[in-house]
Length: 595
Image 1 (cartoon, rainbow, N blue to C red):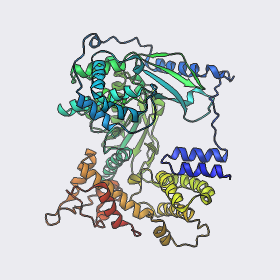
Image 2 (cartoon, helix red, strand yellow):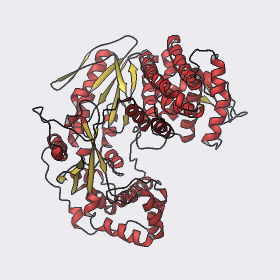
Image 3 (cartoon, rainbow, N blue to C red):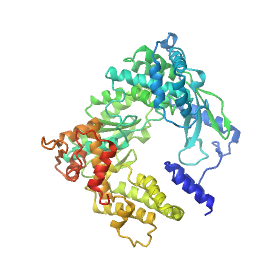
Image 4 (cartoon, one colour):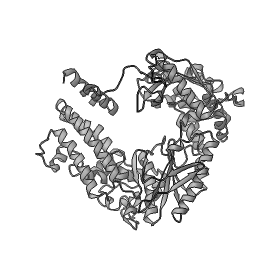
């Protein structure tokens, strides 16, 4: 390996971007499939001329939306015919500008965000007048345009269907969006409007894919612990953000003042995009529905748009967990036939609601699993479609087995670890110990332990713990170049200052619990934990937790699994305003032998 290649590896290893590191390694190993420019084939299998590639993408993305939404005429809102109202103050603009991230990435106006962050406070009066005038009239034409770069997802790179659109917008337009979002949030707080519902785990502080999976896991475990069964189905939406209809959005915004409704509807109308590929641009395409991908307002508007789903399904007495446009519904019943009947009824109501707001369900990707002590296979009927229940389902990247056994998830994580370890071993001799250890922590353990707060439970099977320990110590030996296994496992942990899986499990479960109770979010998990918590007046800062489960599976509910874990916590934490760093250090002292 040449010095230049070595320098590339070291530079990429010092970044915090796993994709950059693995891409660099792929390039150096000759495994990269990057073709330089995008090469497509037409339906007949003939190559598309490079100069025509942007227009092929533009037509494909436009036709896809037309196929899903139908040919939709431009919406002419009465709101846009009236004069707008004063919405922002100079302090609003200044406050938003200070919160901007200090990034050097440029928008299509060629202005980096860090320049916007510096310039707006200096010329806040001019910025305020400009943004206020735009909110009262119309969005500038250039702010309505998105420049889209096609990004390959998977499959053949010559197939146009295997690409997703990545949008770049104006930097000043993003500032305007952030100002508008602040006003939407401010109004929602003042009027006690829940923008995201209680079950949405995306776009919200103190929520994540982990909290979504923990919530669903705890709900399922609670049912199984009672000796009952339940069914969980997931619904996949096709191009959800691209199907937001301005006329429906206007109705869902009825609780918002005209001063806010008007600029929101204006933001959603008269949009357009061009495709950039192979150094060329496509013809301009107009958009009559949808919110452009990559916009600041998009997640909030999507949540408002579909907020009625929660109320609609709540009437069916089911539990709902959502992450962005991924929805998981838990259905209970007296027995399996009753659960199937109720699931079919709920699914119809679910589909009807989505259809009423113009969403399109990818029914081929709708999945369902009956969670039960033994495997149950049955069929759900939805119109002319039949859905066969599966023994396991994938929930935000984690494998949920029908009886909440996590062996397959462990196998998946450790198999990924073995592949990473082999590649890290190849380049280890070019790295210092410190960089190698940072690499392993950032890129290896982050992948292996993804969602570990959910599946790395104290009651994992012995064989699963052994697999995880083998993956852990393999990485430590790579860091120390101890390929002959001459160093003991205990010494590896001390030298590398890394906790083995069982200690990490206790740490991550304790830190997750404390974080939920401190933030009082997510609401469902907070209530579960507080129901199992006892605060002794003599020692109010170290509460105890009670395991109320009847069976082993019940200890997968987060409120039951932590009883023995918190007996080892030496940190007083309850009702104390401790920083995240203080909690982290205190828990490490409690659980990590090396600390």
